[in-house]
Length: 249
Image 1: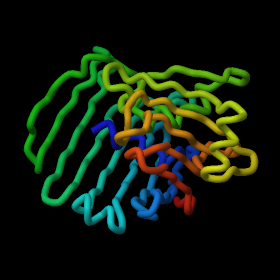
Image 2 (image 1 turned 60 degrees about the vertical axis):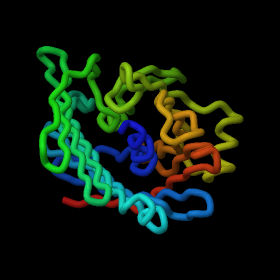
Image 3 (image 1 turned 45 degrees about the vertical axis):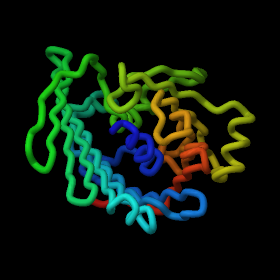
Image 4 (image 1 turned 60 degrees about the horizontal axis):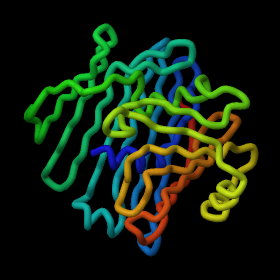
């Protein structure tokens, strides 16, 4: 299941936290080799007082939709905002493929430092387990918190979040080297006043790739503008692009 997380992160990237009582909505498209558009995603960030909600809806499109039985996935992180950092209470993931519907709910118990995992299949609870490790974030809440966690001058970071390395949630974030930056711009294009970051999730998203996500991010608002996963299925690169961004109240 974790293999879907990086694709969704590539599609939705990060959305700048809106002002009090506002909602920010970003739409992304993913393209893959000769298939062209293979997925669309909409990411929504809502903030009311000190509470936040991030919701991502990803759908396969075109030929891939038929091949995947019209795959649709959603991801939701809910919790509170503490000094600009998002602190999740729950993280929920759903997968709809044909007649099969899976739902995973992760509950953060911050008093016991325990994360509970509940799995449902077609509406029926299959199990309720405890994860063998503790982390403070899920991948969505971590991304939205990065502007408050990354410090000027530091080029490499190690974080831990639900949805990264399966054994402990580890992921590494680093600025691209000049050669990596050039390669990424050649692949997806650059942007004015942008950051170029690499996310090592320690999890292959598809066969052949290395579980490394490259993002072009606006310095103005930390919105992810473009993304890349290399050598997907040992055939080509998966590329994601922001197509629209808007506020609503």
